Image (tube, rainbow, N blue to C red; front, side):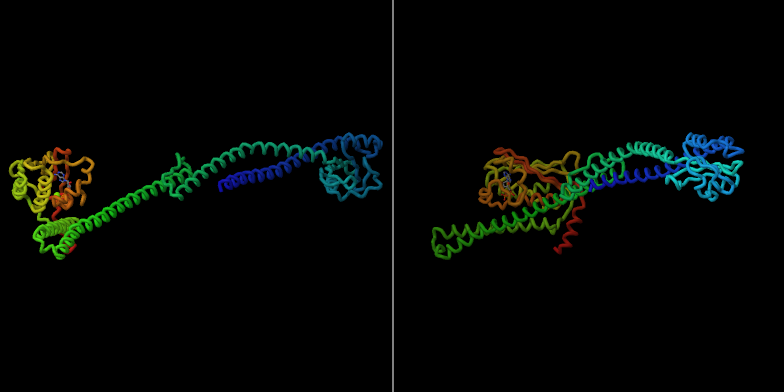
Amino acid sequence: MTGRIFLKLIFTVLSILIVALVAVDYLASRVTEKTYIDTLTNDLASTGRVLGVMFDGDPHSRSDAEFQKVARGLGGRLTLIAPDGRVIRDSEADPAKMENHKSRPEVAEALRGQLGSAVRDSTTVRAPFLYVAMPADYGVLRLAVPLSEVRSGVHAIRLQMLTAVGMAFLPAIILAAFFARGVSARLATIIDFAGKLAQGRFEARLQSPSGDELGILERKLNETGEKLQNTVEELQREHTELEKLERIRKDFVINVSHELRTPLASIQGYTETLLDGALHDPNNNVRFLSIIRTNAERLGRLTADLLTLSRIELKTQRFQFAGYYINTLVEDSVDSLRPLAEKKAIRLMLDGAPDRTEVFCDAEAVHQILSNLIDNAIKYTPESSTIRVSASPVDGKDFVKIAVTDTGIGIPEEDLPRLFERFYRVDKARSRELGGTGLGLAIVKHLTKAMGGEVGVTSVLEQGSTFWFTLPVHDLGLSEESTVQGQLTGS
Ligand SMILES: Nc1ncnc2c1ncn2[C@@H]1O[C@H](COP(=O)(O)OP(=O)(O)O)[C@@H](O)[C@H]1O
Ligand SMILES: [Mg+2]
């Protein structure tokens, strides 16, 4: 395609050149021939006038030899004609054998008293001749010269003109060829680029587009490429996000069924054992029944936690937002967990915020968060140690930070980023043994977010952990959101 454009351009330039050459040739030959003949006619006319003087009075005054010599000197033919058209004397033929010349155009003109001239083929020589006739005493004096010389003269001038025009066009052709080659090369890169786009290689770009029309095309193509690249990247991002969500959903379903199956299998197994006779085995029946009870409790906790999570996620959980003193909220939760801590001889210390520090939240949700965090701290801390619960305003921000710090087993650094995911546990067996569901921290995270706060953890292995969350001081307008959502989902 590029090659064809190159050829078309060159062909156009050549066509223009040929048309110009033909026109120049035609005009040049016409003009030169006319000028030549005009000059020759004038020359012959003046010679004729001189000769006229020679033959005045008597056309036979000179001998035949002399007459022919004069004609030869002239380089042509000399004829004297009587007023009736009869040839009196001719330098090349016998006048007696020559026909009447009265009707020859140049002779007719001279007989009317004017200078006559004509160009035509001679009847005797069969070549073009220029005839010039003028009036004389005895009739008409006519001179004739062959035009072959004129023709070759004109031919030489034509050749020179054509060469000159051809030379003038040479730089034009070279320039056109360069231009055509440049355009062809740029088109080739544009085609190449379009091909890349078609193959989906949207990162390709055309280098430094110029200001001409091709440059505009190049810029537009670059813009198209950029837009396509952005769109594709956006789609890829969305796709990755969807894939991630889908993986999380699948993992969750697998986890839930697995978590439910374990206690269910245990309940089923021990019930069957009891029914098969162990019920009457005084050594084991109570133990089996208590295992069944433990697993039933575990199932209960699991379903309760799952329900809480799904309510928060689907935003069907109704929050009763209000302003509370943070110290009161923390004290209530700590008090309710004190019996649990005492079982392990753990001291629960409280580091309150300045008096009357308020937070805007749902009291029940804050209690749930604190219960989970303190419960974890008690579970993962050795006996007779201290757990510190603190509340303090965040510097420069309208938030209060509540932290639960223990001196327990700590958490490996690589587990920290995923700790708040559902069912994520550092030590699954240990968590189960301690009656955990693996959903506590996920609930903590979702509840905090629902109230406009954030969660976080810092931990050093075997030294202890600090779990913290923040609560807003003012109403962030989140209550309306959850109410509307609640109405929409019909709960
Ligand atoms: N205070 C803590 N000290 C050490 N590890 C903790 C602490 N709190 C939570 N973890 C780790 O985080 C995991 C997830 O906690 P959580 O979601 O409450 O589940 P669960 O308590 O049911 O195991 C726990 O299994 C435990 O490995
Ligand atoms: Mg827990």
